[in-house]
Length: 373
Image (cartoon, rainbow, N blue to C red; front, side, top):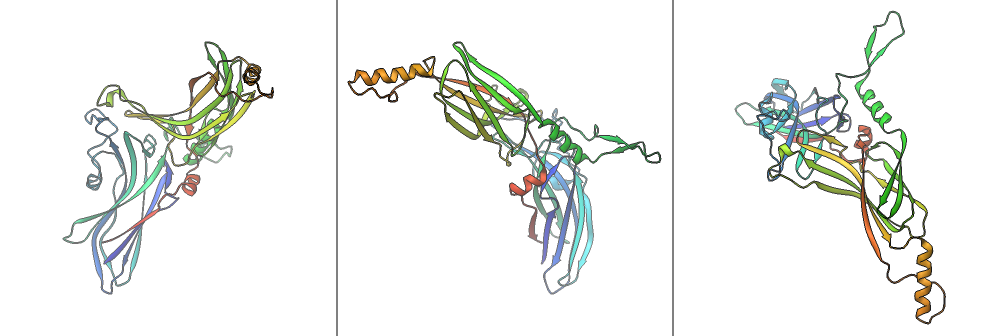
């Protein structure tokens, strides 16, 4: 009996274009010598869709690769859109009693690949796949899921270059892609104050202010509200992710966009001139991205509850009138009923990845798996 342990370095979360280092530990736990015929290792990406709503035209779709570079991926999923070249780890491995052997291999996910995503209509997943076989025995497959993050618009081909001032140094030197990736994320998430006026046919409801142009996974979204002419008595904010299937991939025309709410805050704002609300982006979600099958985008949904009174003073006067009419004292009391209407508004936002090490620390990700051959 041989115990096999497949593990990855770096926490199990990786940027596209980053080298994923893997190791395979083979241990003979018996008191007699054992023998394995061969083993290979590779990294592959797979797409799974809800066939009731999504169809993949394989003859025209360059995202799904059915002729994978290795027959191993065909045993895992039918729709493999990426597969690294399989690396032979050993052939005819002899293991003495209680002996162990560790083997290393690595792979790279292309920079144009989509991030790991589990949605309502579609799922993108990545695995480290190892195949082993004993002599005259079936092939044993061991797979370890990994998480891939991506920032749309950045490719390794367009990667950064820096020029050294040293006269004997090469003219151009390529910068580390991971550092370049995070520099781009930092530049997108720097402070860029923005403001938006929310109006109805009756007047100004509120001025909405944001501090950034984009937000990383795990970041707080600070929303400042400055109320206008209309009396807003309550506002509800919802942080939502939207999943839309492209028209070419729809089974039925007009497939509904799936909306997932990740955070909700409700503020009572009667007699309030301004307020601030903070929404939080989880780490276990995906950033904004699009492929030829699906578009994933983010928004903040606002529900303003507006009273049909112009100013707060009118609500106070209405409260005094209702109390006097009942023959009670003239101390003001809240109205039992208030004529209101709800106005909804959506604000699109951009969500980008964060440091892989941060995601791996907070959002649990498995880094090894074990099996017996």
